[in-house]
Image 1: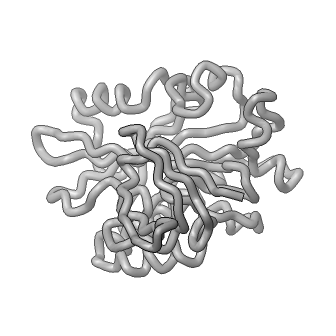
Image 2: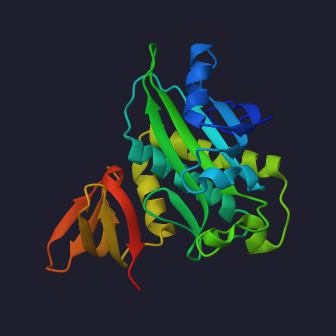
Length: 252
């Protein structure tokens, strides 16, 4: 379906409904089918972190599970999320939609999420499996009422119905380009892309950590490990790791 534009040749396996993307990767790994560039395409993921039980009734959203087998694992999950969120953001922006990326996994039009990514490094007998999960709201006509003020779709924003295969191919093209930058030692380019595309820098924010602690201050920048530098109200600065964050909100 997709020949690959740069370094990776993609092979797509499609499913209508999956209970859990990681579980499917383990299942494929046991069968020896998790080669580099395998893409799992699902119309619905019932374990979706935002929509959960609503996923089965949500038409027009797609999930991609992109598998990489890098051999030696040189990158943390935050850098892989950064690579993917920029690639997906660039793909959606190429359809003339004004997107911004957050810190670190969400992609926005205005204040509403249009896409989001995650990453999981799965240990394997031979070498690590990197699973990059990409969720894009493509042809969603409307969301359940409780989600309407937080989520949007490409169709809602443009009034157009999109060819899903075309969007998938474009997402893979841009993610592939940014994966090559990351693996080629050009992560500074990814960091600079984030600085141009983000919606949080120099904004007042409240960060709720998984430990229960809250941090309030101004978002300054991210460092080479994708940790967010925050200037606190007392003038001091602190670094926050994305994996320690439960929720992040901009203070209006």
